[in-house]
Image 1 (tube, rainbow, N blue to C red):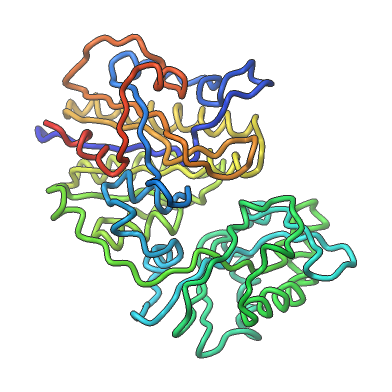
Image 2 (image 1 turned 120 degrees about the vertical axis):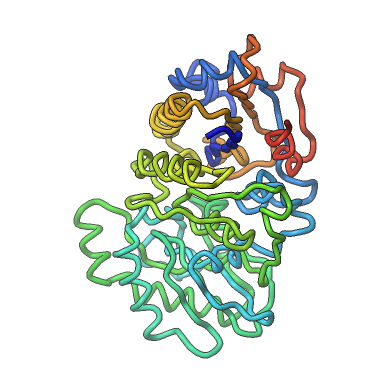
Length: 402
C-alpha cells in the first residue's frame, strides 16, 4: 500500500464557548484528548468558516462545505439529502421534510401551549420509533403525504407537489412554548396535532414514561427541500470516497455524491454508538481501494443539544480515544502515508443548545511531514495560530494538497 490515503474525522457540533464550570475552557480544551494532543504538535491548526454568509448554521450546509460542495450552489434543503439515504424515490415535483418524533409536554392545555422538551425523544431506538411512525402512517398517510422510516427519531415525509415553506427546527426551540413555531400550512399543522393524539397514549410511550424515559409523542416537520443535484465526488476530486456515519443526512450526501456508504452495526448517532465499528469500516475501505474516508460522529452535537457539559466532554473524549487513537495507530502500523483532517462542522454551544455560525478549529496532520509545532487543538489556540480558511468548501483542497 503505497498510495497516500486521506481521512476526515468530523466531530459534529464539537466546537463550543468557554464554560465557567470547566474553568473557563471549552469542552474541547477541557477534555482529555491524548491522541489529538499528540497530533496537534505535528499538525497545522487553524480556523475554518463552514457556513456561508446568510445561510442557516446546520449540519447540512456545514458538511456539504467540508466535503467541498459550496452550499450556495448545491444546497436544496436538508430532508431531501436524508431521503436519498433511506432510498426514497423523489420526483422533481416532490418536497421532502424531516419528520422528527419529539417530546412535547403533556399537561392539560391546548396543543399550541405545549412546550417542546426533547427533539430526540431520549434518543429513542429506530425499532420503537418505527412502530410509532407506523401508527401515524395508518391514519395520516395519503397519495399527497408519504411517511418513510429513518434512524432513531429522524424520519421523512414526502409531500407530493409540495411547497418549500419556512419551518422551525425543533432543536432551536427546546424548552419553549410551541405556538409561534408551528407550521402556517393547515395540513401540516393538522398532522402534527393529530400525531400527538395518536401517540400520547401509545403503549410504547406509556412504557417509556414508566421507565422514566421521554415519550416520543408528536411528529415535528422541518427542513423542507427539493430533490438534490450533487456532482460526483470522485469526478470532482479524483478520489474514491467512503462515508462512515450513523446519520441519514450524511449518508444522503454521500449517496448524492456517488460515494460509498459503510454499514456499521450498532451505529446510532448517540453517545454510546459503535465507535470501534466505525474505525474498522474506515480501515476496511482504505485497505480495499478507497482513497478517502469521512468518519462522522454525531455524539458531541447531540450532547450540545441536550445541554449536558459532562456528556459533551465525554463525547469528545470518546472521539479521541475510540476513533482517532486506534485509527492512526492502525494506519501507522500499515505503513501507509496519510493525511488526516480533524474538525467539527459547526459549533453547538451548551449555552444555546443549538447551532451557531462561528468559525471552527481544524487540525491537519500529514504522516510524511512531522514538523514540530507548539499548538494545542482547541478553539482559542486555533484562532491564535493565525491560520484561517474563509471559504469552508475549500478546506478539502487543503487536505488533498500534494
